[in-house]
Amino acid sequence: MMLNPHTPVGYPKVIHFLHIGKTGGTALKYALRVTTDPSVTFHLHNHDTKLRDVPAGEHVFFFVRDPIRRFVSAFYSRQREGRPRYFRPLTEAEKESFARFHTANELASALSAPDERTRQHAEDAMRSIHHIKDSYWMWFESEAYFRSRLDDIFFIGFQESLAEDFLALKSRLPLPTGAALPDDDTLAHRNPTHLDTTLTAAAYENVTRWYEADYAFVSLCRQLRSSR
Image (cartoon, rainbow, N blue to C red; front, side):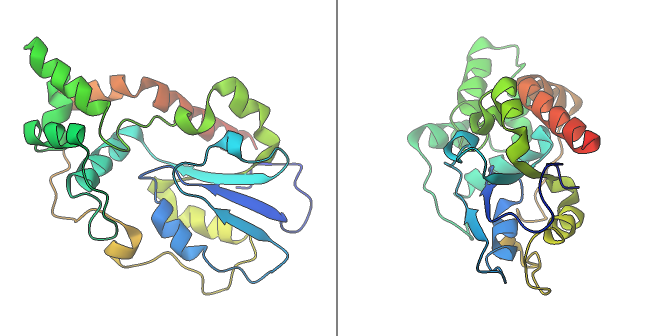
């Protein structure tokens, strides 16, 4: 599960967590907030920190998620302004988007609407809603730059296997035995379970096409983890 084959036996002395929005980062930061080894420096970054912000030679780990699942999660998280875990007021553009599109399926479906104005409103929403507008490449720039930093990539996890991957990560880091992901939905910043998160076939196809570059990044991450 550890990605960097050149990492010496023992723990890295400095390690950075890149927090990509809606990939389980809040739960991970809760679990990783305490270390038992004072010689190891953890940097649990916010969403603004990118790979280029991390000095070359220092280790990095991050989690990714299927782009469609990330889109749906982001839609409802922003619709309620991040509550109850956080509160980030809607921008004017976000307010306009949520006034037009009340569900993730409505927004995704509108990307292929017969009416040009509806399609334009949907595209504007995709480019203005926090998290939805953020491509994975915002954190990693390009495949060439990402590959140039592979020696610094300590671990890549996947939100879909968050619990399993956290245990794998935990085995490689100086964490207390009791360190665990939160069970509480608020602490983990999870969406309520009653939400209708289904997408029609057309909506699914639209979002898949919209996030084509992000799917390429996730595929690259899976290939790298398998090969290492």
